[in-house]
Image (cartoon, rainbow, N blue to C red; front, side, top):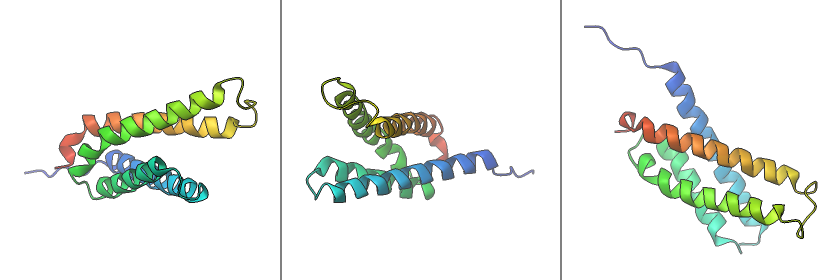
Length: 125
């Protein structure tokens, strides 16, 4: 009898996650190009992020299937990179602070997106 209105918060959250995965995929692709095509895992992570952004925007079921590998690969990449730069004998912390903060924000947003998409997976059928 009554039709439900689409939730605006749900749509805005989905758009935010689409934007997050799109921007992170483009930044990872940029770093891959800067590395002169030597870091193949970054290219793979970039392609996964861009595919995830596309599937989230289209609300495809594949977005739920891509999120666990993306979370594992992206989380491992962020954690190992943070660990490598925090070791005292490598770099002074002040010179790599923007990179470390960016990776921490990436890890936080990736965890948030993973949990949200796995909890709300019924809307992606």
